[in-house]
Amino acid sequence: MSVMLVKFTTVILKFNKKGEKTGWTYIDIPSDIAAKLKPCNKKSFRVKGKLDNYSFQKTAIMPMGNGDFILPLNSSIRKAIGKRNGAMLKAQIEEDKSEFILNPDFMACLKDDSSAFVFFRKQPGSHQRYFSKWIDTAKTDTTKAKRIAMAINALSKGKNFGQMLRESAGKKTI
Image (cartoon, rainbow, N blue to C red):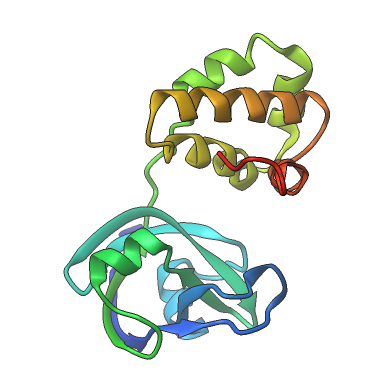
């Protein structure tokens, strides 16, 4: 089966109040376009492509019901495209079938704590990637090491990514 590349023009949107998505900037991927990317699918999956001239990969689109999806635009994407809420955007996207590689330092440390490792492996793949991506975005080795330690500590206590972040809220952020 060949990979389908879809091209469309859209408007950058922002959630006002939408639970955990409050404040998110995103583009809408209507059901007809999503069906071309991955037919009969109602679960999150990764895509790659271009937003204007900015290339991206390994970025998840999220289901919103009725077959519609959204592609969240994080701060690095927004900065790269130089656009904000309400701006027009040319999108070219296709399913990204490349394998996600979890942070190797995190995985090596995780294997030293059997309870954390077992709990981590019970988490959905998307939740495992939250930890890895968070560690990968550390700007210094010191911050990276602190995040690895914080993640392993939380996992050994049976806490998922969201619980770990909520528990650390109010403490010094990493």
